[in-house]
Image (cartoon, rainbow, N blue to C red; front, side):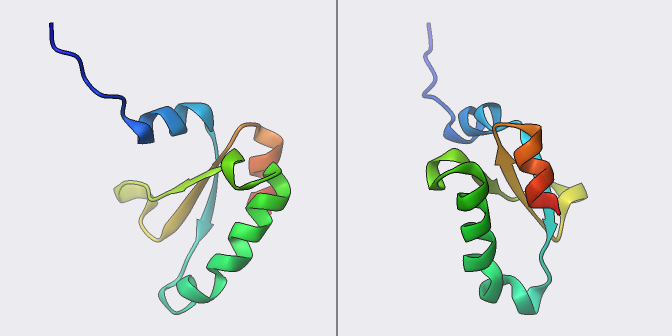
Length: 78
């Protein structure tokens, strides 16, 4: 029997299923990273309580930030 190692991305996307989609334009990506990371920390309660990742083709140009609850994702979306 072949055992696969755990896929950390899959584990985190399952743990944080509610996603806020933030549009990130090229000139502002580096400048506003600290701002949206600070907002995510404040909303979720710490850096280990949210997960940011890139999406697929339909999410091109967006930063996807996963949260544990829909209320947190809605607050970040605003």
